[in-house]
Amino acid sequence: MSNFQDTLSPLQQSAAFELAFRIRLPQPTQPKACVVLLHGVGGSELNLADLAAAIDPDTLVLLPRGRLGFAPGQFGWFRVAFTANGPSIVASEAEDSRLALIRFVEQVQATFGIAPQHTVIAGFSQGGILSASVALSAPERVAGFGVLSGRILPELEPHLADKAALAKLRGFVGHGEYDSKLPVMWAQRSDQLLDGLGVPHVTRLYPIDHAISAAMQADFVAWLHSLATMN
Image 1 (spheres, rainbow, N blue to C red):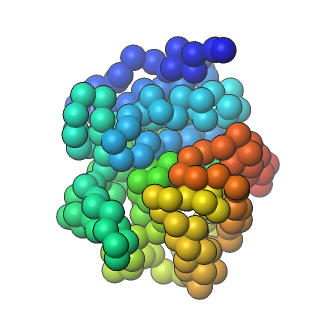
Image 2 (cartoon, one colour):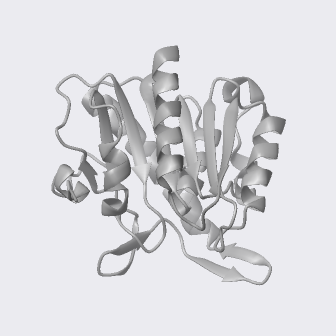
């Protein structure tokens, strides 16, 4: 069994970038596109190494590390408590991470010479939440976003872009039917919200718990490929 983590660069830390990150190796000399992958709460950028490895080799794949450290090797984008009434977040931390990620995407595009129409942001769980937050508030920065076992924050509503700008986005929502952390209703809510906002998207459900299955990964990568052929 191959070690997908071996396909990632050492952690990159520079004053030129808002966040520390790793790059999927081998790094393309002239990337045709860029995908930013965000890990979930309590994990790290290493968690999405296998997903990164599955993406087209001509694509630059970056995996930033969450701004908040909780324990050795455990990071996140905001603190959250899972209560009987659903997830309760520290909204100020989610907002700070949203803004930091928008700046990071801009820095990546400027450094590597990649246009927003060739940039996608996606992630697992809390990473998917932030991917939607970035794309729906700053659609001029990305062509699409992926929410893998995540949700769209109700707290994002004041920051949503106008419908004309959102109509240019493409979205992918993948979720487990038996998700015990974020029940499948969150995917259904995301689907309805995106319909209401006029964001073209696909929503797929899988017979899994809170995870990225092989089928979800394959569908997401195929969706990425479809975006590339459109641009």
